[in-house]
Image 1 (cartoon, rainbow, N blue to C red):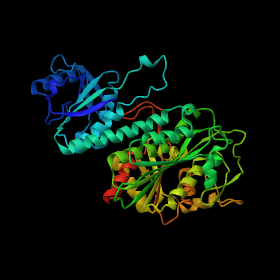
Image 2 (tube, rainbow, N blue to C red):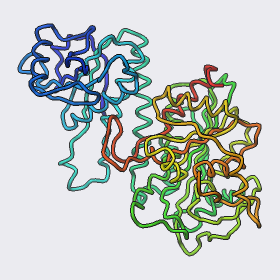
Image 3 (cartoon, rainbow, N blue to C red):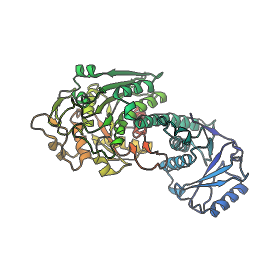
Length: 497
């Protein structure tokens, strides 16, 4: 378990393996402001950095030996670029890059100039997320893997209430994100829908969160045809999880809904074999809901939050649903299944109808819903859709303050007719062009128009199949967790529309 703490000790005396300093692109100078390196040390560090060609460009990592100038044997200079345009997301990313580069060492200290609450939180968040590693399923190769740092110090003031509060919030939110990453990275052989339900129970153990789980018999009694239809081809039966955090005095209710497909073969409409292994990440929305509920309860956010996690495995077994089948959702909608690989929207339909039945102030769902999301916005930017526009824009603004890259998109009216079915109320696929928005148009049918609803399509950002960057590792990223927490906090303090 990594510890992160604030220290007022002189940076030259810190007993750590590496001292991290920020340098700018202007003359490679160490950023001014207390606490800083003594002048003579700083001049020597600048000379050594110039000798090795450090430029200070954003994200650049340069290591030099300390040669006794400070107690730490190594100095790590991280490029901050032009500090005149340095925002908190860049701070998070540079801190993450620096810590990630030190995997395998035991401890490090980050020198912060002009520390305050927001800066401390940004640095701690980047450092903790950059320090993530997932080795749970390694065997004989485990001893050779570089381990995360055990101790991270940040120069600041433990007596400053704003800094202490910011650091604690970073710890809690990053714990949730890393738990979400663990769930996404867990092989599908070890994470069936039943195990997802157990993970939800474990995540909030000891917290004031009530968890209710419906098995396949309970789902049949409820009439959740979407979840049952998707899950019927698998030997691992589906589940529905409801998590309720209801602090005394809460006046508003936020409903969070997360898609939990533990593995997606596409069903009878089977996917190509290439990259199918990444479909273990098709439960990223569920992971975000489960772990955000943990963070919200630990932060004691004064708003009622109900999390809904529909979870199933989409397999092409002998009992699998077929293209052309018609199923009936919890709310009585009939759906013609034209493509069994458009399954996430089917399990979300049941959960959205159940969430809406309780009359929340706002519903926000997160789902790895469409490959079209990556075509429209790439692998790092989630799509934000919903109604009314004020709710969509409010959640988008919250995501920006949380530090998650998202962009608001419309749900064009002309897409809905493409979902018309000749035999049922709606078909599960429609217009291919603009498929991300067509998916949102389908979900919109299952939420009453008088309840504000926002849909986050996190298909690309939820799983990084490339190289690690900034504080983002290869594999599961924990997408949407920060946004969920931010939305809950802003609903509590009244800043969310």
